[in-house]
Image 1 (cartoon, rainbow, N blue to C red):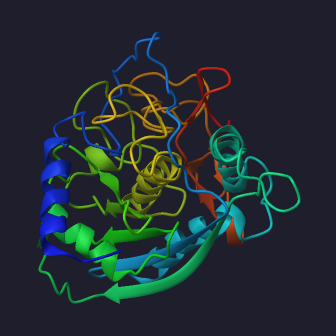
Image 2: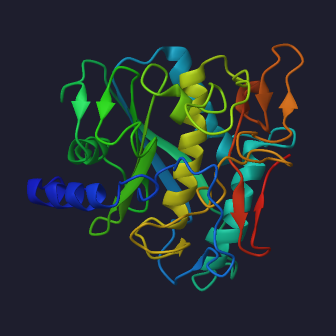
Length: 319
């Protein structure tokens, strides 16, 4: 991903223009009360998706404990790199994305065996910037620069995670994370922040009391960390968006300038029977009382967002 100041500034302006409330490109929107127009459902617009081997590079910005890193690291491993856990699983959630989105879009580019290649998410490099070399108040242009520092491969994704004491332009006001891309280099990135001390009611729901809307008791986070378990929800949402609509012209609903995507088209839904302020019917860990809907690597449990199913035009949950 080329690091060119002018290009970074242009990207920042574009992202800012589409980052007003409920209009953030690829951002997890605070839209529990939003009801989409049935006549304008999510569909494929003939653009490029990410498929095949997707190399993921990670940049940690600020202080994360090793436990926090491992929770997130294990989630990425759970997508395709580890033996599938007992259903419902992270791998099962990813399989929906692969089958309903990526494989269909890539069916015209089969491999040598004559079949569309199964998409795999592969971990590449990890970089840590514990001392926050760009400071603790970041612009979106700086987030893009951090993604470039992770050196994602062509067709790959850089994941940028910011710590609980790092503020990012638009964070907690219009978005909990976002995804962007560099079409010239063929790379994309996702940024997600830890909202534990800044806005847990906005960006770590349902593990914290919501700051607005219908009020219900918060759920116990499956990994015992409100901020990091909230990050997993946002990471899953943004990762679903970045692979299915990396350059803004593939799978989306509405305007390409302010799209709803695979997960953001189903806001606030995690289990069957969900409604505004209620995450849905979830599994409960008998030992901890934590709520979850997906088993992952190393025996971990996660809460993952619903995905829009283009085949049925409905939101699909794991439980």
